[in-house]
Image 1 (cartoon, rainbow, N blue to C red):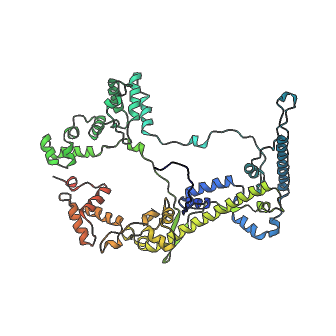
Image 2 (cartoon, rainbow, N blue to C red):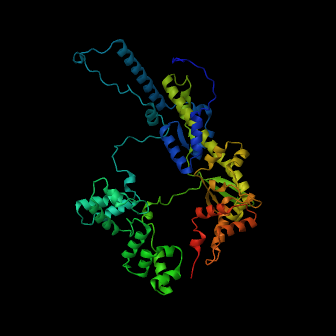
Image 3 (spheres, one colour):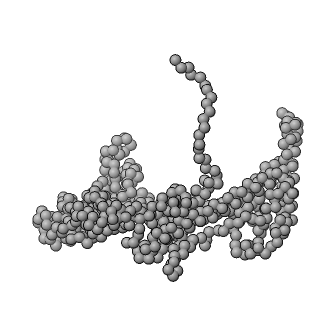
Length: 510
């Protein structure tokens, strides 16, 4: 029988620990230029030793003698004397309080005046007074509305519907039910929950929900609040005063024939000539099956290329898009404060050393990020030269691990270096990850990435006879004849990934 008791055990183990410097380097590597610019702006605001360098500043540093750089500014020296006096006063106050505690009856002793130097925020103090640049006199700060207040925010579907609902005269209970229905619409504008489910909690009556849903169906965009595709299309036809038309009959009762492209059967069932059927189909194709999606999309995204692949003669030059990125340097006015002879105060020296180390590490990591991205881009240009010259059909397979082995880094480093970064090439702007793709099996597939193979499948389908569309097996046989070892299931997966319907749904019947 074993007894439970505390015991001490020694265990040796190897564990990788990320230092703050390494964490910062990994973080910087995966930032794009917009995010890096924001990080640099924050660093300039937080660290007084960092400053933005300009060509004039660099020329002045070269021309100035080294001895003058170490001479403190008289104004800075006066400020340092004030800091030392404040620190000394603070220490004396602390020692006096420890030696003789304050009496219990405060009324008998005069209330000491608060010491303005008792608590010193060295960060804000140095940013305020030890900046070597010009400081304008203090002015009255007037609180103004934020600039974001004047920016237009994207209008959501729910907000758009509520704006219209506010103009409709309704009973309070019906209005509340309509608000709840609007809040339950998905991004496509559909009501995925049934009215019975919404009424199950007992807060709304089923009669009020039915009346509210009818109101939502009258709002713009037409078709919003529908519970399925059929109802969505019917609501849009009704908004066009097409109730009872041929298009209405097709959507209401024969939507399955329309999906199968059976025009002749539609004409036979409805007793209409083919011209009426074709006109009705054109009207149906103009309808929006997802009316709410225009409000739910993420919207356009601004992309700024991080690098440019510029062709000069027969070679490609890699140029960084860093014109508006601040070039950092360490403010030379603070360097003399690190030495004991120049600054005997330990607190001041330690503060300057910490900020100096942080600034120096940030500058090194930014340069390291640039060099890593440059080396990755050099390999991309070498491997994808034909793509840059001729177009996407000449894109070649390229694996992240291959690039990592060539430049001598871990694959995760390459993965971070290409994440969320874009390159401007003669063929357009592409994400750096676009150039990495696995090759296809087979004699021809060894030099063909999956992206190009999918384009071949799409091109075959676009050039097929609509009356006799290609089956997945026929596409597979054609690809095998070209030297690609693929299966029918793989071709079907590629087709589904590209949103192409099956052979049965692609067939057009007269």
